[in-house]
Each structure stands twice: as structure tokens, then as C-alpha cells.
Length: 167
Image (cartoon, rainbow, N blue to C red; front, top):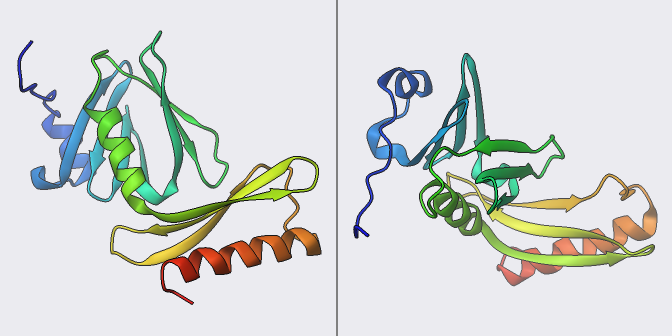
């Protein structure tokens, strides 16, 4: 097994469409139907004429299927998950970089238990420019207009910001 693997070469036309300098590209994965590119700013997926660009702070989670080598990316805003059918089934590369970039955007988080076995996460994140902001991530079954829910989330947000010295 070689110590170093060459990442697949991103076709010039795809790089041009993304406007990505070589130094901004961290990982590339060929997909069954296009290309996925991890850049310093976020994830780009090119499928035919369609280009999806999302910041690392937009990613809630990603899961790599051992059976199919499909990487499923879920988004904090509830947008339907994006499935990336990776051509290269070896570990590392894009899945590893995606994990590292998303984790590095998370500064601090707290899970908040709500009545009815519901939960939300309050996450303090750092964007590509270094700015800190909070996100409240939950399912569509959480009513943030409910006074007790809003109070619990506000208190958690205050604790998360205080833990990072942002009172």
C-alpha cells in the first residue's frame, strides 16, 4: 500500500466553473454523476450543469455507507440530504476532509432536552471568515414559539456563548 495517494484530478472545466484556485481545493472526489470538491470555504458538488455550493457551517452531519460508499450529507437548515455516490471506495480523501472541516467549524455545543423526548442542539460555529455565530438545530417537531422551549433554547445559547467568552 502506498504511503501517499494522489487525489483524482479535477477536470479543468469543473475547476473553472467553480472559480476555485488550486490552493483552495483541499480534496476532490469523483462521483458516479459528477464531482465533489472540498474547498477552504465549503463543499461544492458539480453534476452536469448544476452546482451546489454550501459553507462548512451549513453541514449538520455526514455519514459514509460501508456497503455503497455513498456519502450522505445532512444540512442544518433542513434542506433534503445530499447523497454523493463516490467512485473511489477507499477511506480518506473527501470524507476525511469533510469531517475535519465541519468539526473545526464547531467551537462549542450543548444539547437541550425538551418535553416529549425532543431535543435541539445549540451550536457555536466559526465561519470561513472567522466570525462566530450560534445555530439552533432540531427536528421539524420543535416549536420555537412555545415559551418554555424558547426559554430553554435562549438559556442554552447564553451558556454556549459564555463558555466561549462571548457574553
